[in-house]
Image 1 (cartoon, helix red, strand yellow):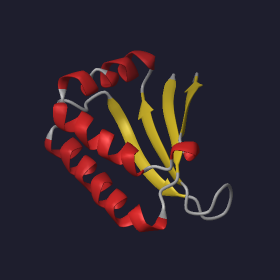
Image 2: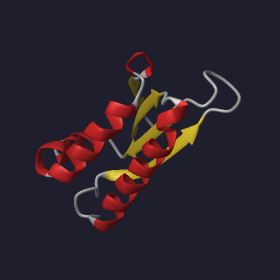
Image 3: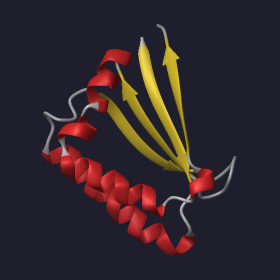
Length: 107
């Protein structure tokens, strides 16, 4: 089984560079602390070019199953840097554009 958490959101053009710099800091933090992010199978950030709202970000987080996702969710409570980085990201996101969906694929 695969569990995928999909986030979509838009960032104003003025805040886009700050947003991308924060996403780089998030990637660096994940790379520098692999034990904290071990439940994550993969993470990718895309920008829409052909469908949906042009320039919207699509954030994919892949986990082996719901249990691994639940383990990852505890990171917010145990890693202050992680929580602070995501809070900063969410301050840049246009509130009405933000959504998350969970997709479960049973293989």
